[in-house]
Length: 200
Image 1 (cartoon, rainbow, N blue to C red):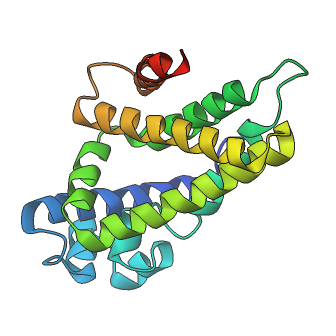
Image 2 (cartoon, helix red, strand yellow):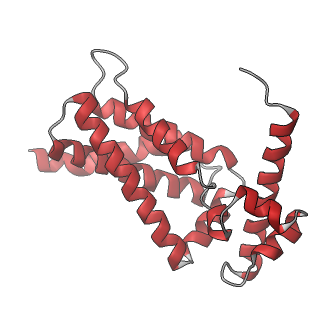
C-alpha cells in the first residue's frame, strides 16, 4: 500500500481537527447554538479552510460530501459473491461487517456523535435518509448479484441492516464491552432466535 503523501497526511489531520472541534462544541453548547466560525476557531483554521472540507456544520457529522459514495461503493463490493457457495445471508452479513468496521474507525468520537444526532431532529432525519439509501442499494445488489426475488432481497436486506444499526448503537453505548463485529454477530443470533418460533 502506498504511503500517503505529506500533503495528504496534513489534509487528514486538518479534517480530523475540524471534526473533533465540532463534536466538542456541539457537546458543550448544543448543535443549534454552535456556528461554523466557532468550529473553525476551535480547530485553529479559517472558515475558508472549513468549507474546503465540509459544506456546512451538518456535513461534519456525516463524513463530508464523499462519505456516502464511499460507503455505497463498499456495500456493493462486499456484496459481490465470494464463491459459488456464498449465500445471500453470508454476503449481507459480510457487507454489514465491512461498513461497521469502516464507521467505527474513529472510535473515540462516535458515541458523542450519536448523542448529538439523536438529540437533533434535522440530523436524525438526514441519518434516516442515508439509511434508506443504503438499504435500497443492498436490496438491489442482493437481487442482481445473488438472484433473489425482489421481495426476499428487500426482506433480507432490511433485517440484516436493522441488526447492523442495533449492533452499532450497542457498541456506541459501550465501546469497551465488545467489538462491533461481535455485537453484530450477537444481534443477528438474537434475531434468528426471535424468529425461530414462527418457523414451526
